[in-house]
Image 1 (cartoon, rainbow, N blue to C red):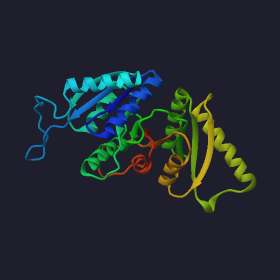
Image 2 (cartoon, rainbow, N blue to C red):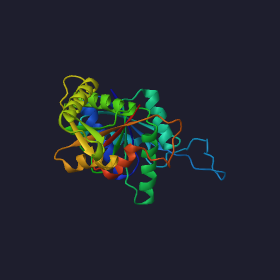
Image 3 (spheres, helix red, strand yellow):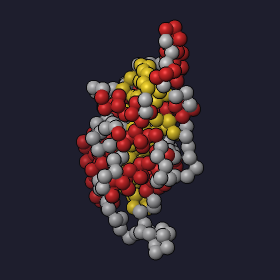
Image 4 (cartoon, rainbow, N blue to C red):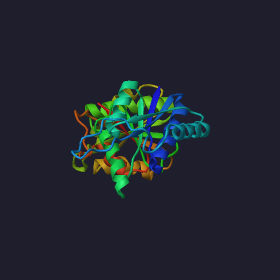
Length: 274
């Protein structure tokens, strides 16, 4: 397996790198840490095409030292590289080119201007994920996970998220929680409810595969809150996996479900392309 992690000078980014290194060690995967340097904008707003003589941020030596620290701390195999270009498209292009299984980025909650910019990068990647994209808040430095929560609504995106959650749960020895979104007025009762639960469990088992602990739950209310609240409220460590239909273009203005959940969750949220 291959993991890719974007790194800048922020504490959120460093937390994401620690998380990525921990996951790489648990999966026995290779981790590449990438520092992307954005070229300065010209007067007309176009990007300068000439390469910078020295990265405005991490130098090659400083980035290598950071990788060595991560490797010593987690025991993971870590390599580094420096790229030039717009951050989100560059990370997406590199993840697709390298065939990465997981792209990890820090997810700011939008207070200061730097956090707003950083959350914009995470939002762009979540809106058009080239592969599963983990949005990691500053609090989530540990790669330990007990439950992987998936939002289910019957869509193709939800099915892709369930399958991805099953693969992660199998590799990390975690439980999959299928969280079905319902409306209070349409909840079945009696035998109808029993049959519905059996149908959901059979469909969930078919999606996640054998050898994975499976729990089916039901919640009503706002989809973002129902996905974020179980993670923050339950004991133990959990991740949230959300399916995302591919979009032709990245946008800083669109708010995909994964980034909205990440804004309210203290645990990693993974956007899965469908």
